[in-house]
Image (cartoon, rainbow over all chains, first blue to last red; front, top):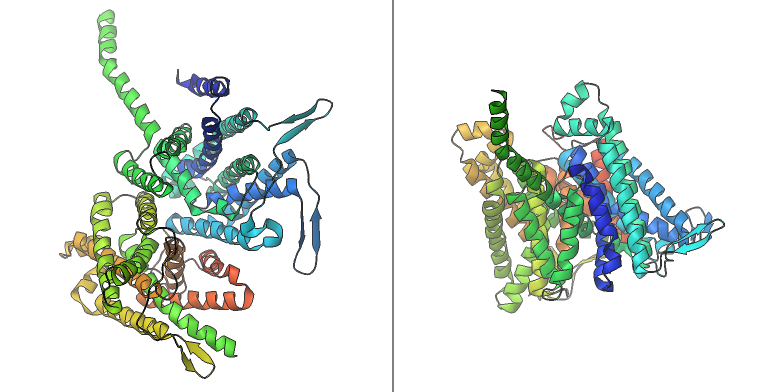
Length: 344
Length: 290
């Protein structure tokens, strides 16, 4: 049963646009889906390698800005009078380049910051995200600074001989996000269930022991960081082309915190955790916005986070799994008794 | 040259409050091993409390600063008892998540109570600045500088000359042994968090009236405090003091000679550079990376 659960969930999700016609709710599903992808990327590092990257939003934002800039084109003068002119490219190349650039940044940041652990790793990653935010804010020639990049083109996919397919409507964008989400889920599940994933878990549980049996810790961590950053970049690209406007606020620490809350609530180190947590926190604003303002909504998030850490430190998904396991166990004695009786 | 001297004067004023912020965090992080994301919010809380007490209740400016420091101390003790005490022994990530939750609640609480518009505080100091040669500095800033120095000296004496300070230092070095020697660890943790919080509130109470007070001011303050702690090494008051002045110097020079837009980037670049090239901090005594 458990094996088929992701497929059932996927089919159920794919049916949503068929019966749901409220554009507001559909919009909530799309943005929630994008944040679930980002939360999944964070979970790969936090849940499977145990490294809390509080600068994850940097990769999200880099993916968003890269994709937007590739498809909008830019004209900047670098130090030394070198002028770089870029003509607009098709949007799908922007999305791909956004993923590659994000992943490359993940490689650099991973290579550098995995020299330190624990609190120091957290602080280096936040610092990186803040530096990127300040660059996005101040390099006005490239990013328009606080004026934001506007009229970012929507996603179109050109198929040779078949013409263009565009993702203008909310329904089609929903399927695009769902597709990227499914691909990310498969990539992460393949990765964590492979030899590499076991090495990651080993170093999370006991790093010195993992090193002593010959696991090259840093290279596994960097690999995780690259995949994680690439997926976050994909989410960022989808975000930019969906909203069609993006400003330096995309790098705000609160977005990383949102991802962390989603992962911790759903259950870090589980594949389903970010999806469950993401759905909960993606839809709290939908229900709460009619009677509370944004500040109160954030206060609810903060309280929720504290309560979850106190009451359900493992998260929702592991708690449900444990509950099912204990139910199985309570049934066990009868069946074993029956077997014993049959045998005698 | 004139410009440079002006930057130095600004650096001294900013640095003295940064030092307060850094000392508070280095004590909390050093003794309790808690990554206190709420530190910046206590800084903002101190600033708002001065606004609240002096403008809304009409209390004397100097008294309101004192009240804000005491309020920061009480709030810190409350946070410690309610949020951190039940989680004693939890790993560093768990307490970090709790403090992030506390940070979000406090920041949005400030915005909810006092609104998103920046506030300013009237002070009894004359508007005309003090001019020495080519350098000018406001009287308020002079007061901030000396008040901060007094608080730095007071916390130094508290840690190095009192019985409580001795117990704190013992806990920093070896918690279990200190406990065996009859140190009440629970009390020390509460005192440490309360002291650190009151210093953060003091920094906010002093610096808030110099600039404007907004809910976002705590956001970057936490990270700046971390930059100072990383520069100065863990648990060292002297290190945090020097670290505070160094960060202020880097910001002033960066803003003055490179670009004012990148002023806040200086702290982050320092964090990245120090942790990558000299991860024990510039003045560290003890081994830190664990």
